Amino acid sequence: MMQDLEILDIVDESDCVIGQKKRSEIYSQGLCNFRVVNAFVVNSLGQLWIPRRSAQKRIFPLCLDVSMGGHVESGETYEDALQRELKEELNLDLNMVNTQLLGYLTPYQYQVSAFMKVYEITSDCEPDYNKNDFIESFWLYPSDLIEWLNKGEPAKSDLIKLVQMFYTN
Image (cartoon, rainbow, N blue to C red; front, side):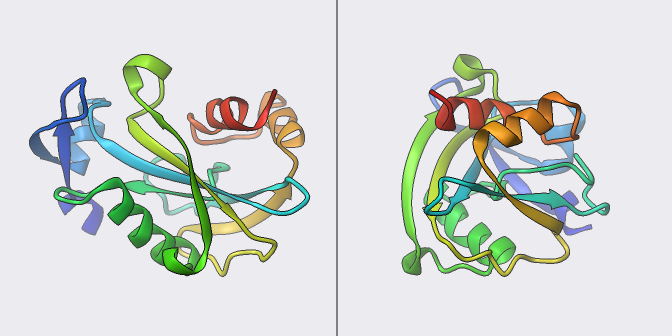
């Protein structure tokens, strides 16, 4: 698998690069000092576009996920990774969508899985998503999504935290 060979930057508490490791090593060692990007696609009704991960995913197979998420590869910025992952997962061009940064989170301060920047993309169109990444998707109001998750719908660990942080009052 290509993912086993993926090299990610390892960062210190200040998000400064201090080394590199294979993605597979990071996960097998349970580390949180690496970088990821996440994005929510939100429509004009305030619904979030929430996909379900494919069964082939090594972590969190068949779980609900943020609209787009990915690792920041070694040498990339968060913004580089956002651009690459938007293209790979949702077939969207960063320059053609309305994007804003919702927040910057660290695992030490927010108990999330990694250092992350979370973005929002405004669109009323369902993304033309990569069928290798996702198998289905839903437009859900944040409150309905949280209700699903509280009833036991399987999801990526950070999903409920991010929705509660950015989409509930």
